[in-house]
Length: 408
Image (cartoon, rainbow, N blue to C red; front, side, top):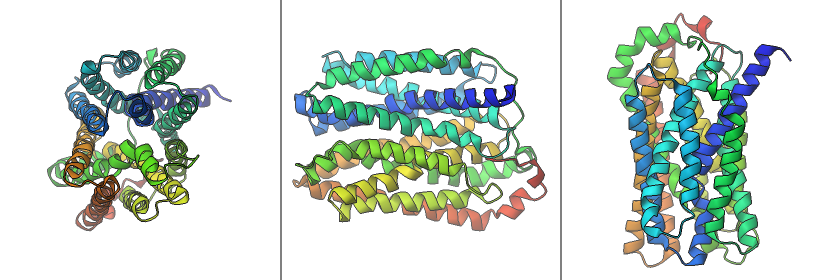
């Protein structure tokens, strides 16, 4: 293997691990631990919703903060700080001090967004001169983190261990992974120029004036569309099939499916309009969310987990690269804008469930209504991309720039 190929592989593995920690643990460790904490009696669904909302508000704040980071800041330093801070915040959740949990989940959300934005920007820039869609491989990280945390939580739950020990375990796992990759982000390299140079510079004014707001709105709907499933999937499964031995399978299956989706994203036709892939991903996820309402047995929930999981990180990959195409400079700022809109969509999820639960005594009916609304939101997001294709035709945006495109 050549030195260049080894460097590419190192960046991919480090990026995937960083996103696994930022997203799989900083964002989503709470999901598999939630049933354990409910069993321990340290919280109820209302408090759980508040903790989830705090994390998503923090994610919004972190996304907005990413937009304000000066260009001269070294992105690798920000990534390293995000990794270390995630480990600390995860470990602190093991403290039996419920009054701290809201603040800790908020800060974890902040750090998660910062880690996602800067890891994505740095890794995609490092890999932008390569052939194919190798950059999509870094987005296997969140799914792998979700799957790993889900499997670990399954074993701990089966052994009758507490949620407190779950947080300690996830902090230890994150610390080990961080120690292995910190050195990669300690190397300052000369970033290659993004390969969407021609189109991005020519169209940036027009895009920022019209196309970017529509893009951000559609991406925000993706945040709302998947988050109810991503927050409450183990709880929904427990309510639907309470005695099934497969209760702990669905969340890891969601994560594994996300990994598969990222790998499939590397196989897409690179010359096609990325918005077409986003439309397909939104509709696939909408079908998965709706499926959990109409098919509530083990097989239906497994199919739902896979359909929601496969597009999960692929959507982020297509969206982040579309930002790099339409804006050739300071990607973190514009990635932060999209991430902020995604976060706003996520923030709306748990309160929506809470509001429905307050007005609907039947938990199953409440979740079905919330999931139905989420599925519709994803369909609306797909419709926005359809409208964008009509208003901003690809041939007009990309004329004369095909020679610059080597991949997503």
